[in-house]
Amino acid sequence: MKDFDELRSVLELERIEDNLYRGLSYRTPWGRVFGGQVLAQSIHAAQLTVPDDRMLHSMHAYFLLAGDIDLPIVYDVEHLRDGGSYTTRRVKAIQKGRPIFTMEASFQINEEGLSHSIQMPDVPPPEGLLNDKQIGEKLKETSPELYRLTRTERPIECRPTRGLEQYSMNAEETQEPEPRQHIWIKACGSLNDNDRTHQVALTYVSDYNLLATALLPHWAMASRKKVFMASLDHAMWFHRSFRLDDWLLYSIESPSASSGRGYSRGDLFTRQGELVASVAQEGLIRTQR
Image 1 (cartoon, rainbow, N blue to C red):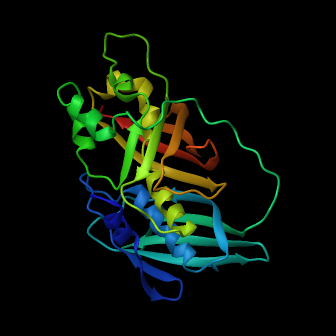
Image 2 (cartoon, rainbow, N blue to C red):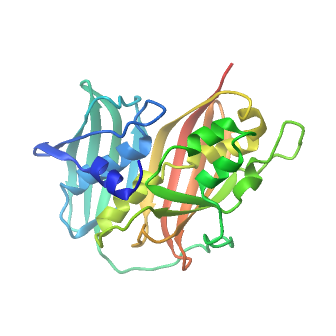
C-alpha cells in the first residue's frame, strides 16, 4: 500500500442494506487481514449510522477469527443507544456467515468540560530521524526478518526515536531493552478537514507496533526463532481533535507479557504536546517450539 489514497479506497464501504456494509481487504504479505483495517472499517461503518454532530470518543473490540483476504467482509451495525448526548453502536464483522470481529463504539456531541492531560515524553523531533524502511535497510544483513517486514509499503510513515539502538541486542548481551518506544507517525498524503476521516485513519495505524513493543525485551531470542503474533482485543479513546497529515508521537509501553500474551498501551500526542488519543491492546505472542 503506497500512500493514503490507496488506504482511503480500501476503507471505503459499500452499502448493502440499512446498517449493513461490505468492505474489501488489502492483500497483506502475511496472508491474513490486517487488524487495523478491520478496526478502521468497523469505525467507518458505525460512523455511517451516527449523526454528523457526534464524534467517536471510545471503542472496545475483540478479534475472534483470522480474516480471509480473498473474501469481502460484511459489517453489521446494531443500534444500542441514541441518547441526548451519547450514541452507542455494536458492529460485527462477518465472513462465511461467522463473526471474525466484534466492537462497541460510543459517540458524543461536542461538549465543554474540565481539561488536563499528561506531559508528552521528551524525545527528538521527527526531522533527522530514520523511518522504519531506512532502519530495515541498515539491518538487512543482521536481521533479515525485520528487513522483510519493512519492505512492505505503508500509507503511514513511522520514525522511531531510538532508531537502530533498540535492535542492536545480541544473544551475548545481558541487558535487555525496555518494553517501551516512541514513534513519530504521519499519513503519506494529505487528508480532508473532516475529523471523522482522521479518526478512522488513526484507528488503522493504532494497530502498528503495539505487540512489537512487547517483544523488545526478548529481541535476542525473537531474532533467532519464528514468532507468531496476533491481536486479541483493542481499545481506543479519542480525547481531542487532531490531524494525521501532521506528525503525531505514538508513545508505547508494554507493562506485561505472560501466558503466551503481551499487553501494550500507548498515548498519541501532537507536536505541541497535546494528548489526543490513547490505546490499549493484548495480543497473542508465541515462539516456535
